[in-house]
Length: 147
Image 1: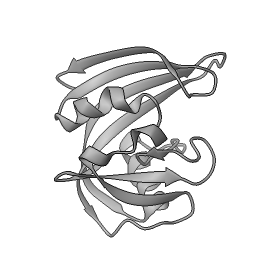
Image 2 (image 1 turned 90 degrees about the vertical axis):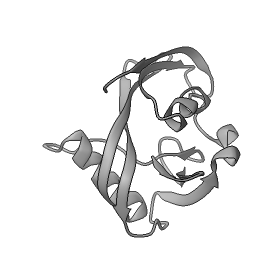
Image 3 (image 1 turned 135 degrees about the vertical axis):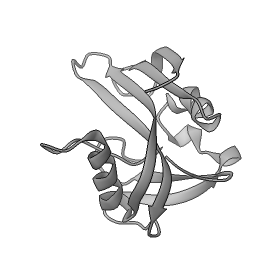
Image 4 (image 1 turned 60 degrees about the vertical axis):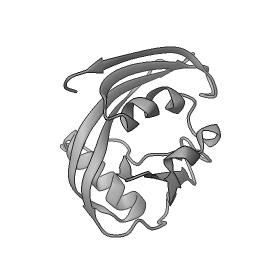
């Protein structure tokens, strides 16, 4: 997550999984890369920014009704970066005032955990969605000292 004072940087997904939703940046691991390397590469590919320092603040798991896969997400707070976010192929980046985060156009789990992130908490979470990902059916959040 990119936060500068009272502003958050989100990306509007233009294609694929999550299309039409505002979200953070990231994606799937490539063979042989670490979680941190993946976060850096995906951010570079999606908005052209180089992450120089980041800190993990969450580990979340997402399940969708009727689908066997569990999606594991490691969330990082970007502490230092270089470059200016720009639209590339997959996302349109935009800064939002924290009070104007577009939760209606985000994943429905986001209102549950964003307040923890904004309060500087580290946490682990599990979310179960309906088959389309439009409704959260179950939430389990635990504040932890270390992720």
